[in-house]
Length: 345
Image 1 (cartoon, rainbow, N blue to C red):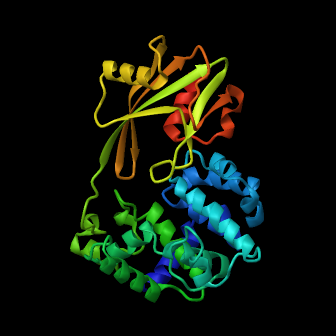
Image 2 (cartoon, rainbow, N blue to C red):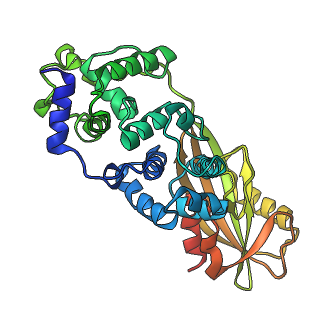
Image 3 (tube, one colour):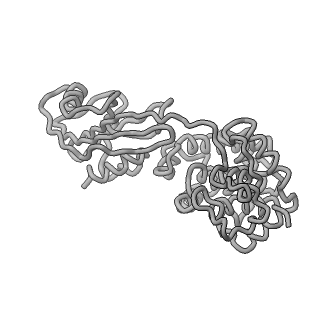
């Protein structure tokens, strides 16, 4: 038996039951695909349910404010996904309010790349497009023992062409779901279940003992280190926050006063920087936490956090004074969210 029948047979017995698999609503399929980019299913499931409950249709999402969208997205990271989601919803509404059914029209929406467009068209409309995600790359490069690096244009073209050839054109939605599920639960990055694999007889990398070498990547991306000091300014039950600008991580989210260094600052350097930014030496500075490590794609953040009780208003452009019981209305980066719990104790 060849690859596709074996894969579909496995899926019929072991495929996952997920809410976005039980609908052909393109809007809900789209929401699930955007949430699941860079997010595991276990984490994304609750976000998906909350998101479609709050924004049940594309027009409701388009009418929301960016802060409302960010508020539900908080904790998922990669906020450009939420921003593009909002922009695409507005584009759909402007063009008539119906989610497009044509692949090229879907692909033209903000934030929708080749994979997402293929997934939407396959799952919502059962169109024969192969959606090649990380799971698909892993399964296909292992089963067919492909040595071409998948982080090169040639590698991506080779795997995509193979997927396009293998897809079951009568059941493209099931085929794509099967490939994703098989990679996520069986042919995993570490400790794949080769000893009980239904594809073992046709798996070329198993025969060649190259399973752990697939998929191949040609280069490692350098990880930049950044050093943040957050200063939570408080006065009479208020916390001062400002909105991050564009062109950097967490664009559009709120944060306390941020001091960034090009090295790990000493206590003396930190205190002096706080004094310089607030403009007075008469400060009560409380250490909240030091040496927090937060990992992002290609970045490693080291964070120290302090709280300062102010005697008067903090007047600086871009800062807003937020009541403690209204802080949930402001979307913040995950490290700030954790630290706010300490500040509000």
